[in-house]
Length: 221
Image 1 (cartoon, helix red, strand yellow):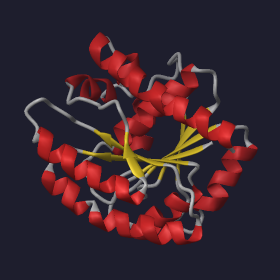
Image 2 (spheres, helix red, strand yellow):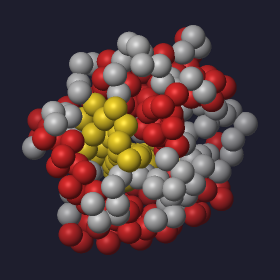
Image 3 (cartoon, helix red, strand yellow):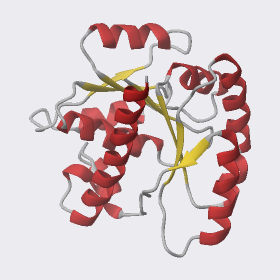
Image 4 (spheres, one colour):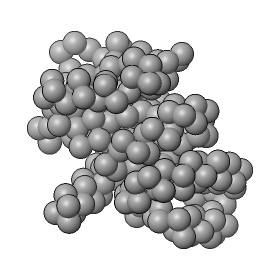
């Protein structure tokens, strides 16, 4: 199963969600890895370096070899027994984004509850629509990340509803703005492995929703 976490907007939490998803599926007993597509920054590769060698949950992280080599990267990891491959999408590189949309079995698009971020999402929608001409069935879901009660609630909800016209539905669960994500990342961990029970429960619920949607998709297929 290939899960791509992507958006052309930077700073929406793609890497944080990718890591939490990878740890969650590894906790379920699935051999899981992440492909870090950010060739320059390698933030998720750096996160893996910070992770203790004796961490209870094993999650491997591999850098994308090149934009054109992504397909072969996925084949290699599949051949090496990885059942769940999370692709941490890079902002700005539209060529990579189009490939991710076409390669993924399941697409997760994090956005922050900001009207500015939602408006910038139009560039991504163009890529998504182009990809659907090649691959009509692309399960895609929005997730509100870094959510807080002071956000522009109703206005954001109305804007998100517009994207359902493109076949992209919002997930029921949101990820709140919590310090647990930053603090755990410092040690190469995730909120699922951190002491903040509320953050852990929130991420577990979010990941479980995605897992259920994946199971449903596989049954339909």
